[in-house]
Length: 251
Image 1: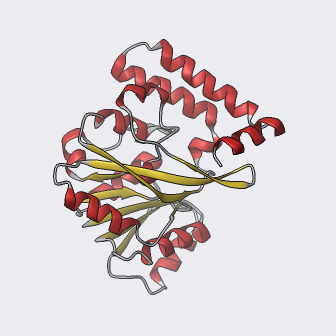
Image 2: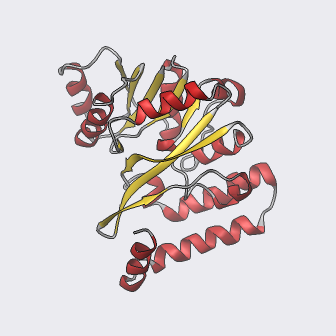
Image 3: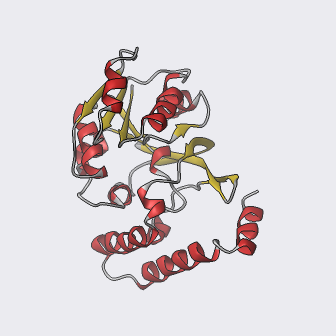
């Protein structure tokens, strides 16, 4: 029983792509919950006037940001496993939910899992994502993507919902559940839309990473140095030569 929470904001076309990737899954979700904070009525009108499956529901109202949208979705979620698939992001294959279902069924003590994801970088599609490593938490979430994460709902009951953080609320939650039983699935789960706020506001995202990590672990020079490194690489890869080096690394 998987509940998928999808937040959206003035992007009907992107939402439709996301929904299509959900609806073609070999195992259907228990719930597909749309949290629409749009300033226009396009998404609400489409949802109310199109043929939606019984497992889909929606809330159309303004909110206080991404974390608030996630938490609104959690209030409506009754499935045993939760996934947050933002509008614009899509399941990469038709059997993602089936793979997740089988993983939790075969590993009854499993609490959460993640997988690989694809993203368009410099005109090419590259594959990213590695297994979660507790010892590398100071690096933030550059190698793990919350859209690929599936968590048992009990984790939210134990550790609470998302904290009111503009960028990095997912990182904050991962730190809290870091010691729980985890699995990495070496498959691509998500085609990631890199137009999200954490990608387009890189300085703010990296600053939030430092603040979040230090909230739980105290002052961390290695966290600060790593985020500085990430920022420098971000600007270096805007140079054509470094673009090519990046693409060679991930071919």
